[in-house]
Length: 631
Ligand code: HEC
Image (cartoon, rainbow, N blue to C red; front, side):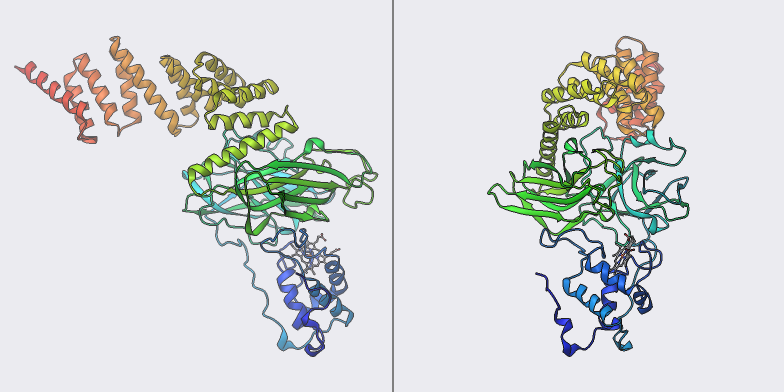
């Protein structure tokens, strides 16, 4: 596949190798994206003078394949935007240096590369910022920082791309964005007096099964990835984005105030990918000095999928990282092989063509770690025992595989996603049965699949492992409520609210359960509690109206008409366009004998909905009574 040794460009007929003819095109394409002012490279590589100044170094770093940074081994997955020099190009660079770096004929010099300044994808539709910059110290070890960007949107949007601008690209090696719909990260924000919080890896807890199947990854020197049509993701008002950054001190202290640019799409998502995480962090316990410590994980696909991309991840001790698939017929397909891991150059790798994998295919991770003194990246000299964890001195071994269920209809795709999630959680529990989030997530997915009895088992396990977790307690209540065990459910919702008094979902569930028991007053109080925090919460509003209505009818039935009127009046206030609400209020007035007021309300109902039968009949009757009274 690759031309070994001197390629066709090196034939004598084409004359000597010169900068203008042979070297500039290579530098423009492979080096200049980073080696230019404002980008991550330590010096520019744009002109002959630039190249000459670093000539020897260029030959050395390209020959060792340190530059341009590109980790995957050729022949193990065909990736988009492969930034890898051929052996022939490397030989050309070396020969140019050996020949004394001739500049060549000015007529040969190619047009300079064109770069877009500022936002690479054009002006974003929305730019998110943080209020206060993060102060990065002048020197010392790399810094891993998570910053929280609250997003205010008008309703929701479909996001097709994100771009991160940090101001100084030299400071940031790479960044990941996590979507935090339930503000779980906020509790950690600013505890050390600086915006955000420390940590190399980050997990966001989520209440529902709604996995985000997108790699929101960014690194300097690349044009951000825009999702194809139909693969945007939905972002709602009030969502937090958490930016997880790997920062490198520059020698002077710097203020870092990144901005996240969001690009919207008007096309709703039709294709919803998923991220399958292979890992076995529980097995990471690397003795000091171990030069090839191995970790493995396997996961069997429960459905047909297409693999879109992979994101391998390890920290400083990672050495040889392999991912592959074994098809049901035994065929082995490589996904990626990185022979010399360097966590500084980690990236998301997207395939040129998606890889189809049938149901029953086994995905495998085989990672090797070097905790010896020979590993220059080892943070410990002499080496120490290293366990899994999210600090830079801990280790990790993840392979994220982005897959798209290979079915075309939305229903089939959703059910495929649920079965992938179920298999993933079961696989996790096989490795660590006491994993809280695996138990919780399995329970959540079983609830989504309507398997409440099975869900109860998993959610009970989650609550047993972490009895102080309001989310798990609330979800267990919801499963029992679905099984018709309302009293038990009510007790769990109350417990969840004891653990977290402002928890909207538990208020909603408790309100609902009480409503089903005919306990209108406390039900209404719970819906009001949600609306106090967020007056625009539509489901809570609807439930409040239902509860008020039920209570109003109850009052009307038992003759407490003033109270009924209160309820109906409030409903009218909250729903000025609801013909039913006016009809109810009118009826209450009629029963109380206030016929004029009753007629006014029926008329209002008919203005809104001219075909409203009940309002029309009631209005007729009330008008007749009014006439009779006059006589
Ligand atoms: C993705 C961005 C990127 C690309 C593409 C890139 N570089 Fe670099 N380069 C860097 C960064 C960042 C550094 C400094 C950090 C380091 O040395 O790891 C660097 C460092 C270097 C160094 C100094 C190494 C040392 O040991 O101090 C040389 C020489 C170099 N690059 C040459 C090249 C050449 C030649 C190319 C193209 C064939 C290239 N780079 C492509 C980002 C890039």
